[in-house]
Image (cartoon, rainbow, N blue to C red):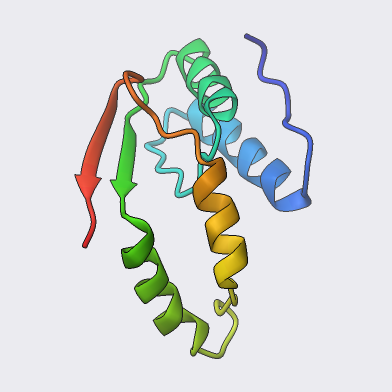
Length: 111
């Protein structure tokens, strides 16, 4: 699979460009990204493999209640890294998640 740039927001393009640059430099890379759908995960895995690198998919698995509690705390914060996520948006994301199953994932349960 060629290293094509995914469409979308500039941050996604920057992440993609940084990944390619770091793999070419043979530097270790950790991508902290919400891989909500399998097609996106598959595209990244194929590109990583095509650069002769190894990927590891780590799934931080949390139930909806845990996510609600964490977001309630985070939603009270101010500052550059504060992002408010409504309960409605959280439920939509949770429902749309294509949970990795049988993709070589390592699951770490969250409480």
